[in-house]
Amino acid sequence: MPSTDADLMKQRAARAALSEVREGTIVGVGTGSTVNHFIDALAAHVRVKAAVSSSEASTQRLRGAGIDVIDLNEAGEIGVYVDGADEATPARHLIKGGGGALTRENKLVERLGRFPLPIEVIPMARRYVADQLSRLGRPVWREGFVTDNGNHILDVHGLTINDPVSLERELNQIAGVVTVGIFAQRPADLLIIGTPDGVRTL
Ligand code: 5RP
Image (cartoon, rainbow, N blue to C red; front, side):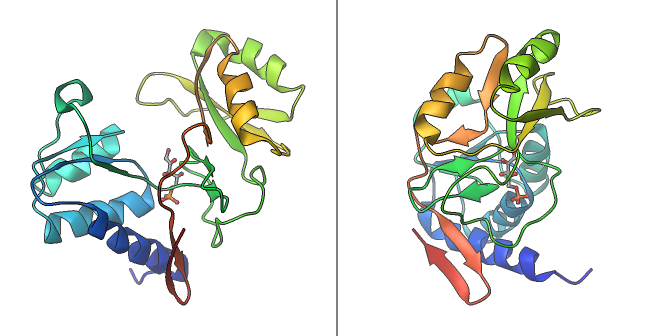
């Protein structure tokens, strides 16, 4: 199947990320279509010692490509972790966890929140967490989807995220929340953005 423009941009960004990975090291690998390109390029061009993976899907693809996958507890310090994002700001704050959401061509935004914010919750607390979140936006249960950890996802629509660091902290304090899809307290060190004119780094 021929690549779409969006897929080609993801592929370029994934290939550019290879230059951050050193031979013989342990690399952290995230999840998603951009990361799938990264795994393929990694297997072809860099001989790493092993990988630590953020999902069953990436673990399978890594092993299929001949890359050893080890448990995070065994790995010790990881030099580089490579992952995709659903939205990113110039401050390198991210929204992640979109998974099955539709592909968007431009993920670089001035303010996070147009992309529905994914929040992983323990199943028994889904209703409670949704009630708490409805003060801020419109939580929608991603029905039929179960995370690798056996949890559910609420996608929060209609958020205006002016202060991602505070919102991340606030949401993490709701009982029943496992992970919030805002990465702002620990932003990305480097953003690699695929564009129609090539790759841009921030
Ligand atoms: C998975 C993620 C993905 O990295 C994010 O959704 C981007 O995905 P893609 O590379 O397919 O556009 O956070 O939980």
